Image 1: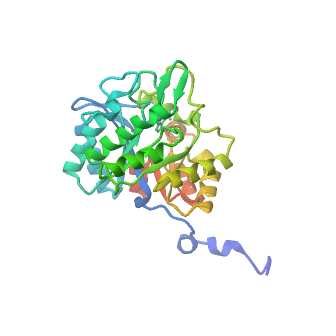
Image 2: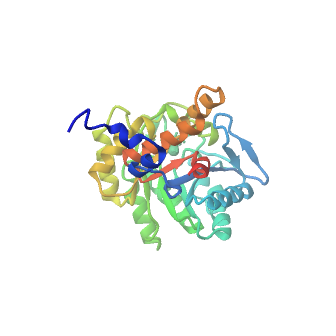
Image 3: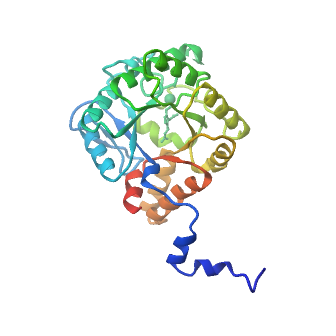
Length: 322
Ligand code: PBG
Ligand code: ZN
């Protein structure tokens, strides 16, 4: 049957019909909310390039967690701004580091709320790279041991899940082994598997004060021209023990999300990154776009592409609209 007997507009006539045939929907359960933890007490510093986001001391982090939990958001992912940075990123794997303290505080007050920690060195190193540096080289294998120590220290503090974002080869396997050997075999790994070298991380680097002090991240993060390589990265991470794989950023990489979901039977997360958030916020502030609608449309597109989980700074706002 074709037009004029067939008319697809019949199923778009009103909102009730549209609801009935809607193929994809967002759920509050899909969201993970990123938070930036900083030292001190009573500290709440706005991040200028990310309207509505802050660097928060642990006391304020607890308020955020309470609010997010109240909205039904299942969990947060934590990024740390340490007291001090050094060549080796010591505070990343210190049991008294900023993240470790935040995790303990959250788990003490909200034991059932999911706490995921970002595992990477760039927020803690003076040079801002995600691994150990020798001259202008970012060393792979010496970094692995530090990442495993960091993940273990997060688990000891009570983290429910660890999320390595460094893009060193072999890190998922080394972290898995490290956790298993110390009795944390039940802690899942959400691997940033296909993480592209992206200009969309700009605002995050302001927020986490983690911009590389020399060079760029192209020798470890992926070339954004490559899709097949993304599938290889995902396959390797699954082989090494990843429980959830992530594609990052999200919106310019919906094709990657789709392909990963088609190819593998594993939960897929997508990170709707800082630049994606900032663009919508900026255009909305200028009155050039309806920010709320653009937010919902963007998040839905990530879901439609195949993501099961969306890490997004919009989590609270979107939860309020669902
Ligand atoms: C650190 C890390 C980055 C993001 C998450 N973890 C930045 C980077 O690689 O420079 C980006 C998140 C965002 O932009 O929202 N490895
Ligand atoms: Zn990093």
